[in-house]
Image (cartoon, rainbow, N blue to C red; front, side, top):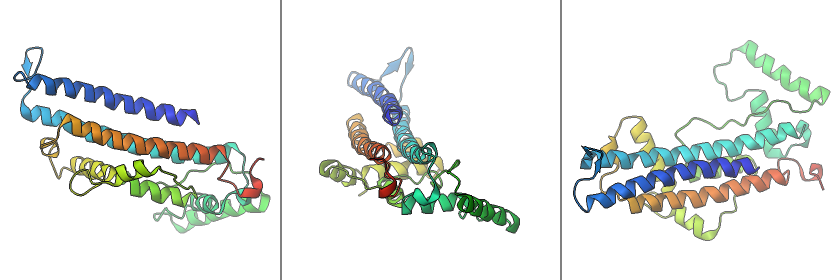
Amino acid sequence: MEDLSQAFEERLQEIETYLDLLESIQEQVQGGAPQIGEATITPQQQKILYSSVYLQLYNLVESTITRCVDAVSKAVVNNSSLPNELSIELRREWVRCTARTHHNDLNDEKRLKSALNLCEHLVQALPISTFEVEKGGGGSWDDNGIETISKRLGLSLHISSDVYKSVKRPFRNDQGALTFIKDLRNGLAHGSMSFAESSEGITVSELRDLTKRTALYLTEVVNCFKLFIDAHEFLMPENRPT
């Protein structure tokens, strides 16, 4: 499961590198208008550059939880698990996937085909060969969303007290770090606010604080998923390796 941590660290490093650039620009402001070559960076352009951090942080959040959940699905398949060996929560997710209960646009024939596929697996006691947990639409991931899907999988998130308080503590607009990032990302994506507006009054120091809160929380989330998979907690206790 080291690939989960590696992918997370690589994306986080991209953000840290970008923050270094923003910090350099902010330092130049102390001596006058910052410049890149012969081009002068205006205050509006500086705000637009700052707003990119929200998009990068949301990308980090969504890509991290997507990889974590997909890693659980992959572990089930790689283990050649039988449906009756899965934990109650993962069995429910497998039925949801195989019977395609979340596809409201299926016609009667396709629903029957999915039901027969489920029946065939159970009658013949076939190992699970394809499985993908339904994660829902994009643009909805924050700490509450991560807690919800973890509970769906039967995974207990053990987040240290300091990190939990930090991610829940209001950052701006009475919102915790991840909710603030999610709402700003959606506002930018759907055009309800401009890039310059989203960064009004923000500083690089605050963006670093926002990044730190997000990174510490996601690091512990990744570790929880790694422990869950390594301990085969996607299986019923009696079916886990000793």
